[in-house]
Image 1 (cartoon, rainbow, N blue to C red):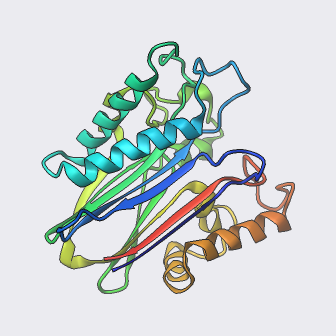
Image 2: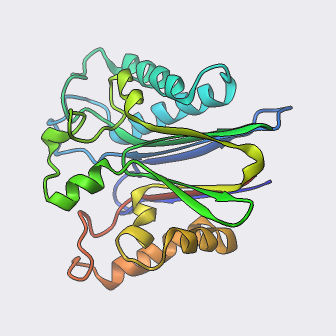
Length: 257
C-alpha cells in the first residue's frame, strides 16, 4: 500500500483551513481517509463564532476520521452526522451556531475493507476513483458548479434549499451528500482533492481528471500543488483564469489500495 498526502496554505501569513488525514486500523485490511476544505471566514465578528476555521476543521476532521475508521457498523453519512454533532457541542456555549456563516467545511471521506470501498462527498472537493482497468471516475457534488454557471452563487444559498450544502452545525446535512459504494476488487487507487488542488483541472485546464490522477501517481500530491502554484503565479490577478482568490489553500491525498 502507498499513501501520500500534502497540504499548503494559499497565503503563508494565514493559517491553513484545509484538513487531510488517513487512518489504517491495526490488524485490519482496510482504512479511511478524510479531507476537508474550511470555508474562509468573513471579517472578524461576522460569523457568530469565537473559534477559527482551522479549529473547526481539525475538530470535525479528527472526529470524522475516528468514527469512519472505528465504527464500521455506521454508514459514512451517519459518521458525518455524529462528527458534526460532536463538533457543535464543543463550541455551542458562547457561539451562535445558527449563524449562516458559522465555521463550516466541504467534506470527502472514503473507507475501504476487503470487500467494498465506500465514499461520501459534500460540496466542491473531489474524490477520484481509479479502477483496475485504469479508468478514473470523479465523484463530485456539483451544486456550486451548477449555480456558478448561472451566475447566482450567494451566501443566502448556503445550506438552503435550492442552493448548496456544507458541513457546519446541522447534522442533518449529511443526507445531502453524494454517497456510494464500489466493490473493493474493482478499485486500484483513490485520490482526494480540495478545490485549491483541483484548480489544476477545474480552473487552469492543465488536464483532465485522468491526467491529474496520473500526475498524482507518478509525482505525488506535492507536485500537483506545486503545479497549481505555478499557474496561480503566472496569472496573479486572475485575468486569464477567473477565480475567487488569487491563491487558495490546497490539500491532496493519493492512496494505492
